Image: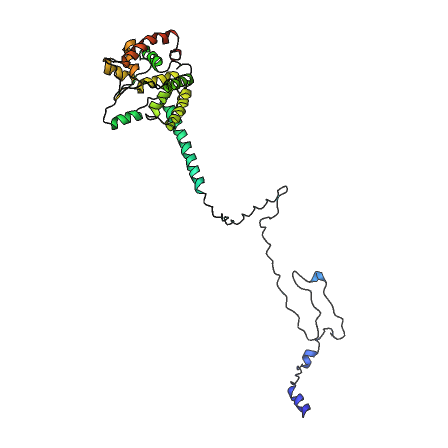
Length: 336
């Protein structure tokens, strides 16, 4: 039974039917069974024709194939590098941006350090501003002073008439030197001999109290500071005195002094004082008139140049006598 099943599963083998004519060679043709196989030489193959394959019994000959023309490849761009040319170095890649470092939180400075920093900044600002003002007033007359502002606040008018030193009568400058600063052309802003003499004189307790301030110190006070005493103002006065002595010079100091010094209530400068008291400008002052104006310079609000009495009159006469001494001894040599 098993063998019968296997025989049924096998497919029947079909044998191709060959007619006697197909197996018999053609008349006059060689018998393929007895004749040797002939292969054509390569010269007989023809163009692009494959060589003949030996046939087998019963195989039909292959048809002749037409030659196939293969298109020639066009010449493309040459990728060869010319001789002597080097390959350019590749550009370096930009590194990716790094994240910004996070700075640690700044510690708050102690209070005393912050206060000290502000004090230093204020001092630097004051130094720069003060030097700038001194340099400016070296060429421009001071338009206003703190004393003038005080007179305006007090209800007094302000009268001033600027006049160059070259036009003011020389006797006025000599009278100022005789009355206020005999060593004006010798010192550098401070007359230490006069300061010591004034301290000894004031220690006796006399009624007349005199200081040892020079014309340079009085000019610094009149232009940049306020009237009054105190160590703080005296310190600022000394600072500005050093500045004007080194930046202005003696002629400019005397010129500014004679134009900003108070010669009466609301009257500033010897030219305005001359117009007020003598009805003419300072270019026509006599030695006596110059001495009378110089006599009121220490206390302009209490003394009068017209019809002076008591100490003011005697002081004016003393100044008149010393004007000739100043000229003869050359005490005004720095102004000539």
